[in-house]
Length: 337
Image (tube, rainbow, N blue to C red; front, side, top):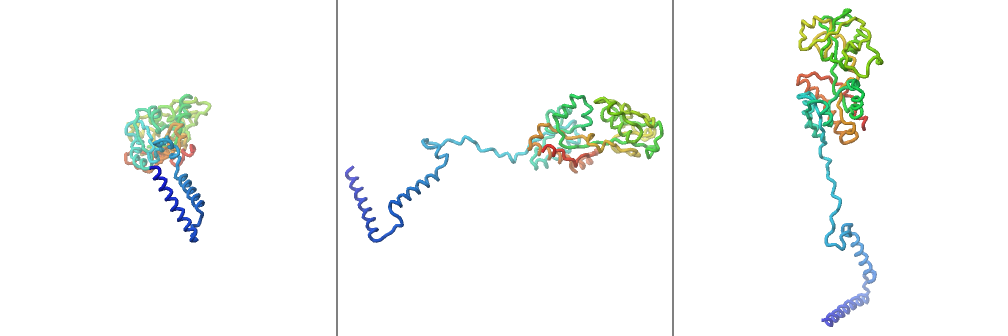
């Protein structure tokens, strides 16, 4: 067998050599020498091999199977909506109705809004991403510890509403007609102390009927009745409390004037000076740490925009509820960018 193999190899080599010499003798030119062609062929083969080789192939040399990549491809979450829980207090609040109706629109904008009802504000604050909250004036009347808690740990991202308080009269059409010693009735919901009572006092001061105590004469926070804010009673007015549920036309005639919320079918004598002051405007709040997350901040902004919309005003009207928007042109989000 071995002898036969060598004989054939010799024969093949002889034939190839004769062919090459024959071509050379006839003046044939292949464009390169055999050695150069062989070198070019080798170089091309080496280059192709190098280009075909990948890191995975090299890593697999000496192994039957190439190892799987240790890094899994990142999951694409760009299309997933951002979940935001908005806590509302009390069943059937206007906030709940408004935000529930904004759900589908917000979802299209990448926000999955969950409106959750709580029995009290503390629970809403501790378990929600967003919630409706008091004015800064209301917070400032708390004790130092609670005031610091609200100020340091929660951030305002938008304003909601502020119901004005006003001075009306069924007997007189102007402040000048109010007699000395007039009987002025105050809605009992405004006479329970705290910031509401202070707003009553500010209204009476704006009407020119009293002067207020200086700030140095006030404690850090108060729960006093309106008269406790009075420094000087310029018109000797007498403040009385009334229950709005029992305020009839006959009873309106008993008082020279009365102070209550919002609108009333009587002569308006004095507007609320606090309604133009952001210090008294209610707000939408979030956790202070949450505003540091750009994704959450964008979601908060979309919820605020949904709240501060014509749809909210239309919903309030359809529900038979008076709503007074304030600060909707103020961008509180910008300070966190």
